[in-house]
Image (spheres, rainbow, N blue to C red):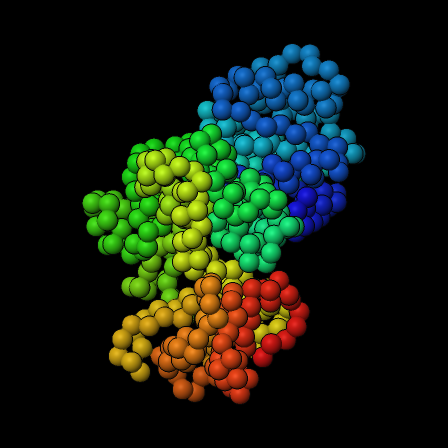
Length: 468
């Protein structure tokens, strides 16, 4: 199993606590929650029930069968009520640890919300004093947060732990592609993001172009219509959401730009964007160092594959069908370096975070992110790909990220030096440049003279050595 070491360690810790534990696990679809739970269940005797999108009585019947087979090795008859089913678990629990996993809990509690109150009653009166480890898991992030852990929920205050399963970062994602070069591993991550289901679709035995052709563009391929299909499963009015996601993928990041692009009212767009934020597809960002209320707010797609799909596939399906899958894949591949710009910035951010945790930066950053705003030195708007600030704002790392096919020239070096002038002179400033294709000789000489750090794609896979 690739990655998920921390998640499994948390599950093991809760398992060995020898007292009642109640974990809520959640995360967007395809993120690998069930795989983690199955891996854990393979290590310990577990009641593993996966709820289905069907009526309450059928879910109760299936749950009855699961728990009876676990405790009595046979299925006698369905319980008449959920109270009976939970009481049965109570009565059969002895000294041995009982692990009860209910996967996709929203499918069970959605049709019958009273299940939450029944669980709460059993926990309060029985399970909290028993050797039970309860895990409720779900893909509906808002449901798991609000309807289980939220203040209005009957289960509020009963949980002992929670776990939001996150996408893999670029380093863990690279393990899916053992035969790829460093550049190809980064490109695959920029296209697919860190969702295990998507990463498994590509094979490192094939080129990036061949994978795009066979696994994304081909009719019936796993990833051909995945974002649109999931959107229909998650949301009503998918057309408006599709339009918003396409606008953001095309670079319309401010609320006014998005509203103008899709010809919808700004307030309506804001409401829909809040929903997309709740299901972890969109993220609100402000310049690094500014508060959440900044007027410079932008919105970005958090999932690289959604960004790729809405950038290329969504609006061009008819054109690509006429062009043919092979030529369409070739056209996309030729453009991929430009597309990779934002993804490469995120990869570099993840690298800096890992280095910070190893204490290999000049300081431990309080904030790391992109910065944009007015630069008084040039009396114009400016930006920094990545800015890392210490808590007192007295030190900063300024980082330029380039995923181009040519060595980085001196002009790019000068641009970053100019951008640093938007910050106080008294601030201690460190320069870092990360370029896929390396650097020109003048840049190398100047960086050595001034103590700037130069990194390539290969360096992003090396950790633990100091740079500054």
